[in-house]
Image (cartoon, rainbow, N blue to C red; front, side, top):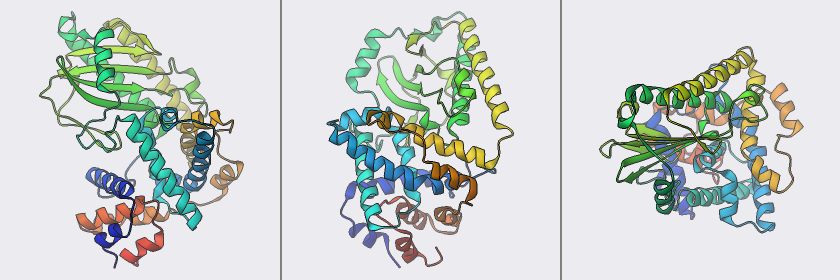
Length: 383
């Protein structure tokens, strides 16, 4: 049996070791069977999507990153093409399915190192959110925000409680819409970051973006492309993030809202209840249109959208080197004719039968781009 001690000791790249441990622990804190209990089940499992996606996406990403570097782009410039750090983390779920050759293993390892570097850049050196903060903005940016953006004091509003309620409804509706666009990978369309402690309190930022991807019909009628919410809460409130950008809170945020600033498509929106209600109704209308389009879709059709969402994330990178963003025709054909058999899903479904420490070990090996399924079988031959 391979122990965690020998497993770690035999690998020299401490950064990837740390990535594997952090993402394993975070996911297992959410569920004993992570990846098994999320939308769009029961129609299909995201793990089945990984089965189709992983090889082509990671291979293509390796090629694109090399081309970008050859074209003279710096790591900072490449990082900005991904836009947000949690978006990159969700791409790294593709490591769950394993490489089939040493060349592929080498390429994936290089991709992993690069992606971790880009996340670190986009989080201002706070790669793994060890302080439980997702620091997308630097201290200088926060200072600039406070100097230039008119954050409304909610207590000064005539119908403050109603405003709090409508703001919460809009944020929830936008998250629901992102889930319709990107399934379980909400970070493909939103980034929550902070908390940033300032004199006013704690600033939590919610940014929604890429809300009109071309691979959905319903998204083309969505009323805007980006939205940003700066919300201020008391400093006593516990707000935490994990590596994947998931927000953890222990009490409702809405009633404790102290201040608010809203932008849509880069333009400030007046914090007036009538205006906010109009925005909420527009989002609701788009959600209803989305549900009409989705409700009768087959497993193959939904799987195709799930796959396309992952390749869409890489479109800004591909555009810089004149490569089409869509998956290959071969991959589209595979989705049509092939029954997915993700090896890692069979392992995830057994995790509840192991101790907590054993679950962490298994998850670390699953996420390690240097590790094969044969390596995992050494831990338990039944795999």
